[in-house]
Length: 118
Image 1 (cartoon, rainbow, N blue to C red):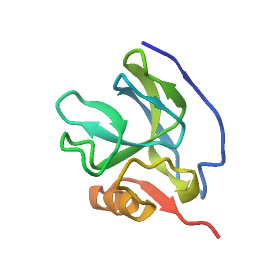
Image 2 (cartoon, rainbow, N blue to C red; image 1 turned 90 degrees about the vertical axis):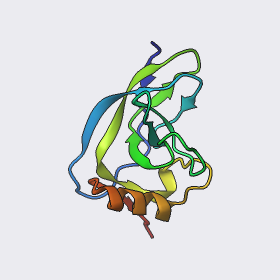
Image 3 (cartoon, rainbow, N blue to C red; image 1 turned 120 degrees about the vertical axis):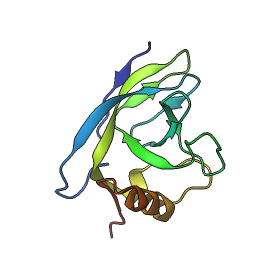
């Protein structure tokens, strides 16, 4: 397993309670805090959610809480399961927008919110 580091960047906004949980980031990725993650159904591991995926990860599910280098192997990392996020700080996979991510969170009933700040 690799290691994860915390790098604050004003990702969290609002007073929505913040809850994190440990997940497994699938190998072959180097992700930054704020990456919108999807769950690969067959393995219960996570990767950057891309709308064209067909393995379950096309649906945004969590937001990465720490930078995570899984390029050499799977890594256990913290992800936000509850919170409100500045839309400009989220890292979106191919085919996603802040609006589609927010819609996926609402459809799932997840306590995750995307805020467009002015």
